[in-house]
Image (cartoon, rainbow, N blue to C red; front, side):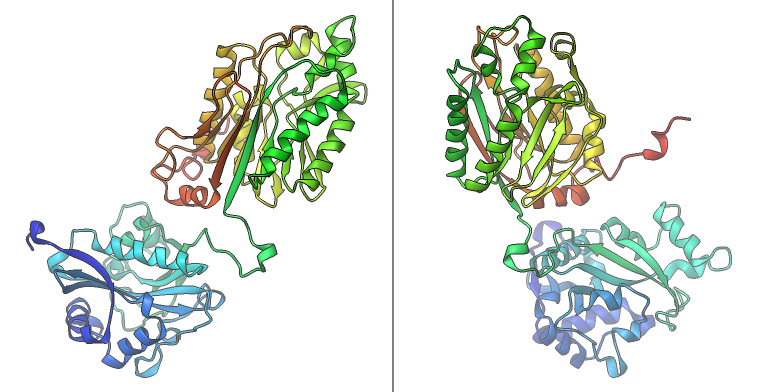
Length: 504
């Protein structure tokens, strides 16, 4: 075939193409009886027309992929070829099935080496997603096992193919297309002498599969987040500051945001309401307002129908002061995350203690976690969250200088990449000269993504103008994260070498 003359396109097969289908299958399966009869192809097209795919070159059929709709629970367990294709080559399809079963994939000898088989597999995967099937299943022959059956078991052969010590034209191709071997099928196709009757049960899992729940139970795939870049300003009362909080909650909720995020120590202006002998006394006075702010912001979450990350506030507990952030669900539930790593300033001047628990919270808009400022500079915490299914990481921060801010920013971007999640930064800006140690702020709130083709080229969804009070919004596609985990250019979570991370 002249490459420059190729006009490759994918189509759905029709019965009018049967003569070309027969020629392809006869050439591919001379040892297994050649092509299926016309009535079998006709049934496949009638039962599941979208699942019968062809590749055309200038109008000529040069490849095909045939599929049948089946019940996942039945065919993800041991079965034989006859369970799929019965007597007289009648296909046992299930129009209510929740999975695709891959039958034949054939590429003309004249067009091999052009990765057209991969193109057909990609089309199958997209079809699986569009129809919300649970998975693609297949019984995969191992035709070159006949050369090794006297020296190894089928499972040893499969293992060697997986490690690329041995090449198998079918299994090697399936593994390269992200299929996983689930089990060995015995007596799958007894007349298949090359495979000695064995086959592999292969599965490609559709990570976007959604059970057919009611609308109220369905998982959100796109989540909207609003981040508040907060101006530190003098206030005359607690009610004045709460009114400012509610103003932002109201405004952000007008944009139908699922989450609203405030910065670390956003209510620090309250320390200026009265004189304090020292910073330790001032932070303890501030902690007295925390239960009130937690409860009022929880009420706002319900009233404005948005989950609120309350930035962070000092909390007095068992004689100690902690730096704590609350997740106020719009259902009324409240979760808390204490800051784990305490900065020298917090430790020396405010005598703040570090928490000892890290959590990932299940919400109505995904799995989220909170790392308060300095905590994001410790990669272990983000990785622990990622292992629990983290999708969005919220980072309320307070930094005084640009270099302090950039430590947080660069580490936050690293967490997004290495843990394949979104990261939201919310910081404060402006001056607060009447409060010791909080007289200057530097901040640039941002929403960050992993770095791959599905995301912005610079891995920044949006970012605020530095040192300016404003709101930041972004929509976060959680389905893109699921695809990244399994089909990304690199797969940081999947490719971790935990076997070499342990101390010897």
